Structures are given as C-alpha cells and as structure tokens.
Amino acid sequence: MPFSDICGHDRIIEVLRRSLRSGKTAHSYLFEGVSGCGRKKTALTLIQALFCQVLPDDACGTCPSCRKIDGGNHPDIHLITPLPDKRDISVEQLRDMQHVLALRPYEAPRKVCIVDPAERMSVSAANSLLKTLEEPPGNALIILLTENAGMLLPTVRSRCQLIRFAPLSPEHVLSLLELGGMNLEAAAIVAPMSGGSLQKALELDNEALTLRREAVLSRVTQLNIHKIATVFDASEELSGNRDTTLELLDMLLSFFRDAVHLGAGNGDIVNRSVRSAIESIAARRSFPRNLELLENIYETRRDVQRNANPKLALDQLFLTMASDSR
Ligand SMILES: [Zn+2]
Image (cartoon, rainbow, N blue to C red; front, side, top):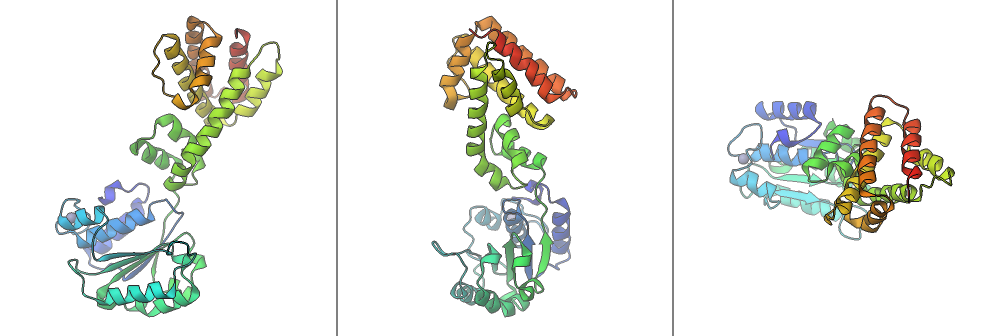
C-alpha cells in the first residue's frame, strides 16, 4: 500500500520519505507505539518503497515486488515473533535470523527483518543482536517494533533510529473502521474506547457493542410510567457526556427504525442479533406512535447536539416513551 493509505502519522511518513529520496535510510529502526496504531503497516510500506521498481520514495502497489509484499510472500522479508506457546523470542531464533541476513538477497536490493514485539526478546537474544544492529550483514535492514522502548536494553535502543508513533485519534480510528466496512453506529461506539489502536477497536467491537446494546434494550423495554424509577434510572445509567449520549441516541434511532420496519411488515432489519427485543419494542405501541417516537429521538439528538443537558434530554425522552407503552 502507498504511504497515503496510512492514517495519522504524516510527520513520520514525511521523515521516512525524505530519507528514501536521499538514500539515507537507517540500518536499524525502532518503531515505538501502541499495538494496532500502524507501526507494522508503516514498516511494510517503508520496505515496499525501498524495493519498489517504479517509485523512489513510495510503494507503487503494482510492480512484482510491491505485489509480493502486499501478498505477504516476499522471500527477502523475515518476520521474527515468539514461537507458538513461547513467551519470548529466543536467542536461537535471532541466530538463525542473522544467518539468513548474511545470505545474498533473492531478488530485492537487501534483506529485511522485522522483530515484533521486540520487548519479548530474551536478554541473551537481545545481546546476540547488538553486533548485527550496528553492522547488519549485507546491508540488511532491521526494524524492531515495540509498545515501550523503555523495556528494551539501552544498548539495543542506542543502536537504532527511534521513531515514536502517537496513538491514533478517535476520528482516525472511526474512519479506518468505516473504511474496513464497519457500520457507522458500531464504529462510533468503539472508536472512543480504542485507546488509539485500530486492533483494540476491532477486538472491542463485538464485546463492547453487545454489552451496550443489551443494557440499552433492557432499560428501554422496561420503561413504565407507573414505575417512575424506571425512567430516571434509565437516563441515569445511559446518559453520559455529550458524545456518549449522542452514541446512545444513534443506537436508539437504529432500534426504532428497525421497529418501524417491522411494524410496516418489512422483516429485514439491521439489528438482527437482538431481533426479539426489537419485536417487543414494535409490539408495545401502534405503528404511527413508533413513527412519532422515532421523530422524538431525532429531535432529542438535535437538542443534545445544540448543547441541551444530556441527562435532562434523556429524562424527557424516556418519560415520553414510558407514557404510552401498552
Ligand atoms: Zn512498486
């Protein structure tokens, strides 16, 4: 992939491209940043650009070399990770790697090795790497990936060019999730919880979303005007700051759109995994009343966007929802 496909690390990419243009890339890099923020993607694009047969400072994406790297089967790139069932990267793995780096590259100008995560190198493994980092055999390139450079031996750190990756902003995570095909409602919930890691956001997706959905559906289906606590407990639990309240309202919109679909005799809904709860929402009120409630949720969303107090806005909305339940 070209550098322009990497999100949120413009300054780092500019530095790397400048070094590519001047032919002054380092022998050994240490990429530090939270897992899932784009370190490995940047490393692979740097390698693509180094090997690319068309462009001097980027990946063209179409030459044989770029295609092999995209396909994960370039013979001159070696990835060192802990072996299955092993916590650490062993000294034997690194010795083998150094042996391989000393051989002539098959087709690229140089051999490359990525060590991920570098903080899992045992002390003896890290020590065995020192000489290689200083003078990589055959002009090889070594890229170490780590979440915390402070966990590496100072002698390893000092031999590498350190590049620090900031966590992705929630906006970048959101746009990457959407680009990956996640629907906006799901993405808007998990992006702020991701800590700047796309990987974490994807892991959170199912679990966090399922829990939040269940909490919202449970509160909304229990609203009862004769038990007024159900109204205020719901807004207490579900409201938060403006952003989380807007997310909640997006979720409610999605539920009520589905309920209106069901009421109109259209069985194809978005929230299939919680279909029975949506059916009970649809059955609690008449079809026109569910349509009105959908409009009420839109209005509440607009109010909250225009700085209405989230808790008071939800109190009002949930009171309306409770007052006409059958
Ligand atoms: Zn290329």
